[in-house]
Image 1 (cartoon, one colour):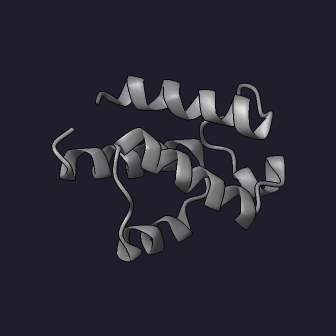
Image 2 (tube, helix red, strand yellow):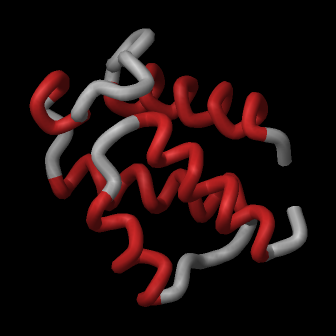
Image 3 (cartoon, helix red, strand yellow):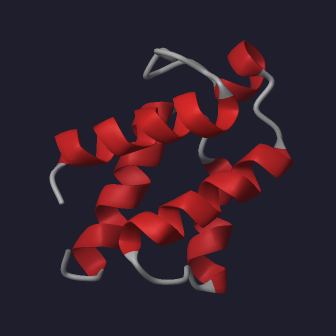
Length: 85
């Protein structure tokens, strides 16, 4: 899974699930779009679908510091690499 593929899928999730079109890649999602903890849980579910496996408790904890689309892409890219995707 390439970074471009990840970004495309993440942006699609944001548009379809959260009705956020063309978010700034480095904008703080909480401040700019009122992205909250419920949204974050939904996003983690979408990431699990994307990766085809459940996230471990530790992997979910790592996601707590994510604030931007670029950080989400970094996170997914790292998870995909660790799963050999």
